[in-house]
Length: 96
Image (cartoon, rainbow, N blue to C red; front, side):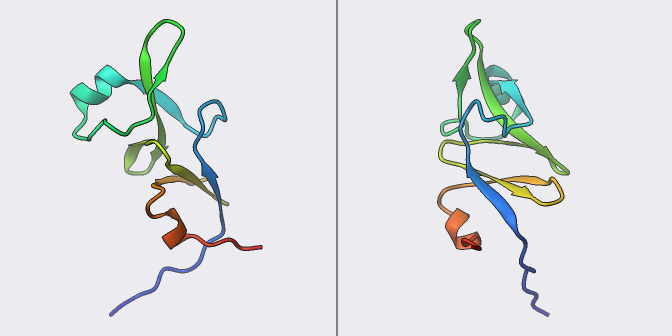
């Protein structure tokens, strides 16, 4: 059997540092050492003390790090997702 995803309304916001869309930050060094992800395109923020951190959101599967040009999807129930610029407008359309 095939199923179609039910439509949901959500806010879609292009990620920008300083807008408090992320749930936290991880040191880039820890992301490199602990993770199995490519870090080339992650957002990297240099703090005043020189530490480089990467923003992420937390969800039921763990953490998703935010990449350059990613969008944050905020559902009505508070759930957050990250979606790349290459897929966002294939999955969402403006609901006026």
